[in-house]
Image 1 (tube, rainbow, N blue to C red):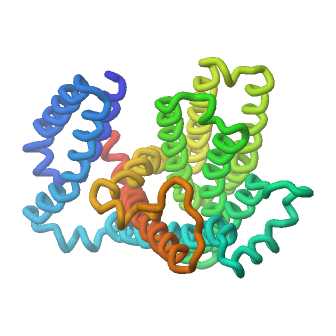
Image 2 (spheres, rainbow, N blue to C red):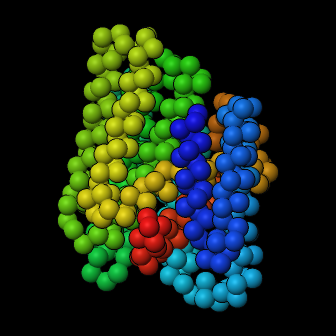
Image 3 (cartoon, rainbow, N blue to C red):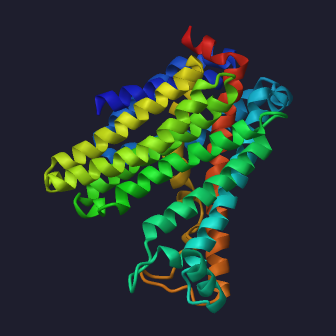
Length: 376
C-alpha cells in the first residue's frame, strides 16, 4: 500500500506541473502535502475509501486548473495551445472510433444472434460454416471475426482523424494492432477455459483491472508508434499483437493440463503474465522515444477511470445498455436492438472522449518538450 501511495503522490506532483508557474511556486508544495495526507488517511479505511478520495481529487483537478489559468489571463493562449488542440483532436478521434466500433460489435453480437428473422438468417449465413454437425456455434472463431472487423473500423477512423498526408497506412495499421491486441488477450483469458471459474471474485476483479491497465497501455502505445519516424516500433507492435494471444492461449492450456488451475499459483501466473505484457508494451514505447513512456503510463491510468466515471455521473438507465433487461434476455425486436446499439455507442463514445482527451493533452505537452522541464 505504501508503494501505491508513493506512486500516486508522484503522479499528482506531475499533474501540478500543469498549473501556471507562479501558482505552483506559491501553492504547489502545500497542495502536494495535502494530497499525500488525504491518501494516507483514506488508506487506513481500505482500498474503496482510497479510490473515492482519488476520484474526487481527479474530478476537481480540471476545474481548479481552469480557475488558475483564468486568473493568470492565459485562457485564450491555452485554447490555442498545442496540448489543448491535440486534446480536442484526441477526444473527437477516440470518441468517434469507439462509437463506430461499438455499433459494429453490438450489431454483430446481438443483432446476428437475435430472434429477428432476417438478422438471424444473415447470422447463420455468415457464421454457419464454423458450426460442426449438430453443434452450437464456435463463438471463439466468431469473436475473432468480430474483433478483426472492429479493429479495422477503429484503425480507419483513427487514421482519418489523426494521420497526415502520406501516413494513412501507418496510422491505420497502428490503430488496428493497438485495439486488437488487448481485446484478443482478454478473450483468451476468459473464453479459452473460462478462467473466472477457477479464480475467486476478488481475484477476478484484480485480473480485470490488470487487463484494463494493459488495454490503456496499448492505446497509449498507438500514439507513441505513429508519432515516431522509426519503423521498429510499428514492427514490434505487430509482433506482440500476433504473439501475445497465442502465448496466452497455450500457457493457459499448459496450466490446465498440469492442473495448475486448481492451485493458488494459477492467479499468480495470470497476473505475472499481465505484468510481463505491460513491461513489453513499455519497451515498445521506449523503442519509439524515451519520453513516449508517458503515453503508456497515462493510457494505463486513464483507461480504468474512463470506464468507471460515466457510471458515477449519469443515471444507469442512460449509460447502461442492458438496464432493466435481466441476466437472460433475447433481442426479439428492432426497437430493443436499436436501444442497445444507441446506448452502447453513447457509452463507448464517452469512454473514448475521456481517453482521447487525456492522451491528446499529454501528447501535446510532450511535443512542446514539457517532459524535459518535469524531469529537471
